[in-house]
Image (cartoon, rainbow, N blue to C red):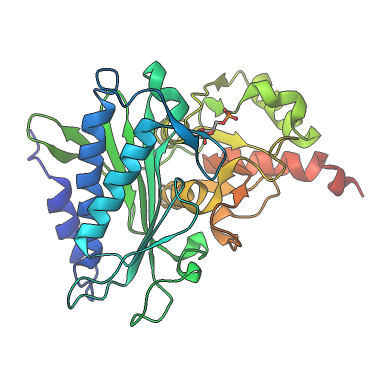
Length: 335
Ligand code: P6P
């Protein structure tokens, strides 16, 4: 039986890969692991305590905010604030970024972006939800507070990214740009333990994941590609929680699509704290991630914190195929 490798141990082992590492990134990743354990504890008993149900508000996305969203947001912010390892936070639940004053003699060089509880509409029906996070090096003057520019960096600038999936088990998957590894929470010892080493996405898979209910609202090229998936007898799997849907695609192969619709003309999903971190993970596992206008997600320059993007993410051969359909059938391609 393989020896248990905890998340902390793994992060510290891997820190040696970075000769100039000062331990701050290590500390940040560990803080996110702690926050994930705290959120997991509440997610797992959400049905028993009064944090179910809808909080009286909506977030910057206009989504109705579930109490567990707020709880997860608070815990992540608290853990990151107390660590002194980051100088700023941007969250789906907060209109503006949150500068974090330096502790004593520390000047942190990182900022963190996250969606504290993605897929929260699934909470009350006991379907898996997740946390998505990304870590950037700050670009602003380290002697002062962080600025918006620190958060509006391309995904290619990500130092680390990952997600926590609160499902049948609680799994933390992350990358620091040297491959992707997964850690399953062992509740008996309260530790995330290495369970999926060096995750590689299959070149193609049997699944496609899209909200078929919007089919008639998609552009013709996307409808043609979705018809192609159906013609191939691929299986449609759509949970309505991006982390869960992308996680299946990462592990079993396939493609996840959220194209533009009449309601979401630039797509629904958020570029900075949903699409970019998951795209970094999937690319590091050998996959691809592009917008439905065929731009590599990680190359898109964010203009605003809560900017939306269309996305096609997953197995490289399937993303390439989708690209061919767009090139062949989009009206722009016909002229
Ligand atoms: P729709 C959850 O609200 C979310 O932001 C993503 O996690 C998910 O992929 C998407 O929205 C689902 O959106 O329009 O299909 O309900």
